[in-house]
Length: 296
Image (tube, rainbow, N blue to C red; front, side, top):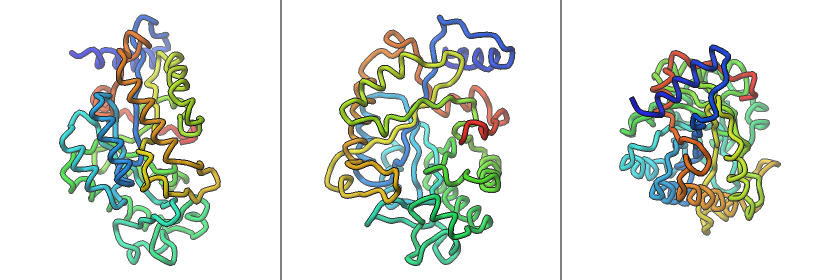
């Protein structure tokens, strides 16, 4: 049996029994890169990260215009665990997307132009129909499955799809129906994202974060990568928390991850990289548990 399975089983047993994991055991790190398929520049970054040899999981936005390119890239790399980044928002000025199911099918989820709303606040201000939310999320899952790529898990763009108990119940229902995992439902502990860290400090921040991982849990690092080119630098986040020079932040995350990929993570930090395929195989879909108390 592979070493990661032994470690994961140990984590589960120790969590249930209340014992503390021995420090000699490797810490577990799961890297999840979001927004794959959002744009060509994000897909280019994903390809560069794959080529670096780093083990990670890729969350694809199947509602976006560039998802087909993302699928082509990922089909050639089955070592990357693919998830569906369930999408109910379209946050960039002058670059919009709408529902897979069609604006006429889910009118309460879209603005007057048929696009998703840019923020959670504007989405809920339009009194979205729960039935329409299920219709749209199901359509995104069906598109993902029909793309021919193996799908392992669901997660949620900007947290909108699990913002209310009713919507979270839909996500859980669909995960069960399609035999998919849900990110953060396997006891993962979130590391603070690099996204808002200053551009020239991300690599140092990543190294510092990896030195203090929880040895009794699966540590989850959610990343947002991209290439700082004309396409990505033209995008402006319409949310109040949006970062200026977003493309530079995403490229800096990419560079930090590539730098990390060049070291022996077990020797340097005492950690083992895993992905969602491995996590799901080790823990099992039947052992998922809602992380509502964590805020997700």
